[in-house]
Image 1 (cartoon, rainbow, N blue to C red):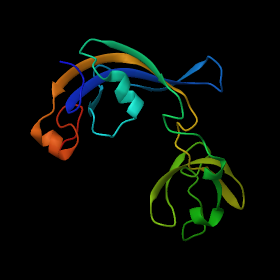
Image 2 (tube, rainbow, N blue to C red):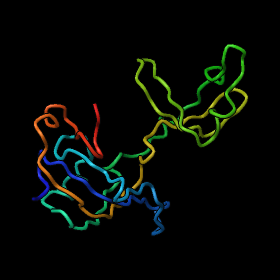
Image 3 (tube, rainbow, N blue to C red):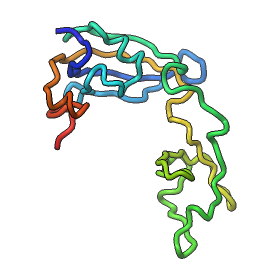
Image 4 (cartoon, one colour):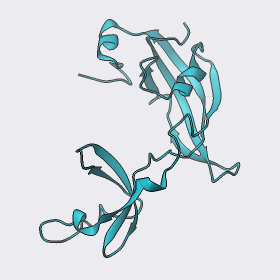
Length: 172
């Protein structure tokens, strides 16, 4: 059976990016045979080029492909790095959670319209917390290597819900 629309696909992969234009690859994510990435193919939830690279492959086939940042998570925009007033992080006693508001941590935030965002703490001063709201992989070229572990037809329930059920998928 080959990978095509409305198939449940299970893959084991390694995702790396490149360090500032060099050939050095940095590990981003690694699945395993015991904990593979399982998804409903052709549902529009994944990067288009990720699915295109897997289209037509079968169980046991290996893959090795790259996705440029333009077709991945886009460019990193300087205007998505903003200074948030330090008071936004203070509790009623005027204190900041020193374990949570730390350079390198991602914090859940909301914009003015109430949309949820994840912001990376870049810098902390007495007056502000500099936060980067770009996607963590924005501006990064992606490199996927791996193997197709399983391909099966999606059930009617999976198709109607738009996601995989059972092992590796969603449980209701």
